[in-house]
Amino acid sequence: MNDLSDLLRTPLYDLHVELGAKMVGFTGYDMPVQYAGIMSEHSHTRARAGLFDVSHMGQVILRAESFDAVAVAFERLVPMDVRGLGEGRQRYGLFTNQQGGILDDLMFANRGDHLFVVVNAACKAADIARMREAMEPEISVTYLEDRALLALQGPAAEGVLAGLNGAAADMRFMDVATFELVGAECWVSRSGYTGEDGYEISVPADKSEELARALLAHDDVMPIGLGARDSLRLEAGLCLYGHDIDEGTLPGEAGLTWAIQKVRRGGGARAGGFPGADKVLAQMTDGPARRRVGLRPQGRAPMREGVELFAAATGGEVIGRITSGGFGPTVGGPVAMGYVPVGLATPDTEIFGELRGKRLPLTVTKLPFVAANFKR
Amino acid sequence: MKYTEEHEWLEAEGDLMVVGISAHAAEQLGDVVFVELPEVGTQVTLDEEVVVIESVKAASDILAPLDGEIVEVNEALVENPGQVNEDPTGKGWFFKMKVSDASPLEEYMDEAAYKEFIG
Image (cartoon, rainbow over all chains, first blue to last red; front, side, top):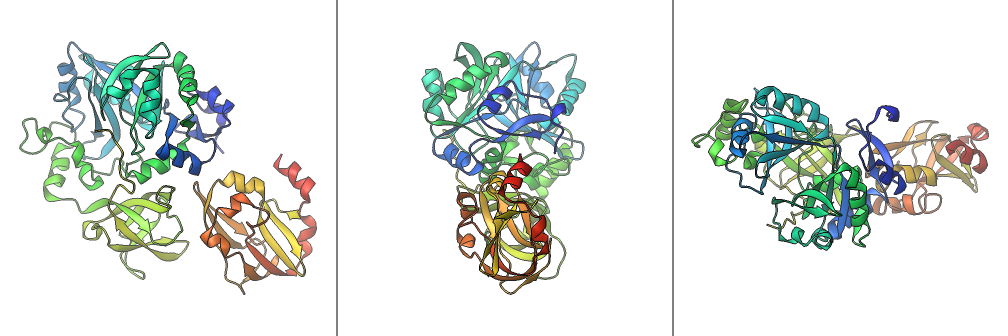
């Protein structure tokens, strides 16, 4: 058991308890793991809309005399095209280390005169320290502790949010905008981590419960805990930091090179110039030795993180490990992700996972398991 | 019906003992998505792992509550593991065993004691 007394609370803690959530310690926060049940929460999000409290994530503003000055500095930390990001647009990004390993994954947005960055809860202290170290004093790095972050995800999300402010309907996938919701200035992006259409909403902490209640008042919206958040993102083939990607994982093997725009790749106008660039770009050119793949256990038994993978039903060395796995409610069966040698990474390849002393077959499967439903 | 501290229930049916998990345990586990049952004819000893249950959250083991032989398993759970949540003390039973030593039964809790145990 976690020692609950040491856990931090998000501004929505009391609401979670009132809604009957089962609370667990997660990255130092006392968070809702489920309300009605993971299976029904998962299915409801895919069918209608789910509301997630992701206030444990770190919200950071980077500011200088111009957006471009911030972008130039931020490009020294991430292999993404930051300078070319249009105003009112967001991108997925990665912090890398000198070995090209991934220190964290993040979202960053051009909000006109500043860069808005959202990082993982478990990494936020280190991320903020790294940004300060690398960029201050030229760039001011402000950690926003007075804002909550909500995610509204699912096919009904647009209708629900547009009911509070029509501006929500005008946004496309990865747009960001500022508008009022329940009388509070909210910073809204059309994005999320479930594979569904939806929004992520940064709201002043003191108005977050009112906003959450306004969203939950809609028939289409159910509160969703971390359990379903995990099964939704797994079906969507999205990485969970610290599990599917970590300091020992390079973008190439993780299948995240789509996030590295041409301008930062070999031959690009601003090629390299981020930590570990030589290693990251070399792996993109030469190809990785292993790759993150989708895996479908052929039987009914879920295979979870840590399960060792083998090329054959008997004998041989461990060829890789499952990094995320469980039951996929929309798929209707077990799903997993893990790393395998490139020679075994082709879809439909059969490999084996050792579960309770038995080798059971899995099929390498194209990701995502459930097609994304973004509003492009 | 008797209960163990491992949240299993036992109920006599003729000269056999039927075993499952309590409603409280089923609720704590969450949606059950996979059940691995022992083979009929397996000899089991007290506290030996006999059933694996996987919920959406995690895997758990069910331990043999007594010494004996597995004589029947609830095959319906293979196709329909959700029965463990829907009807834990009825259709959600796991196995029936022929008991060779019933003495631990005296230590197990009755309904009232179990309710107190789970608080």
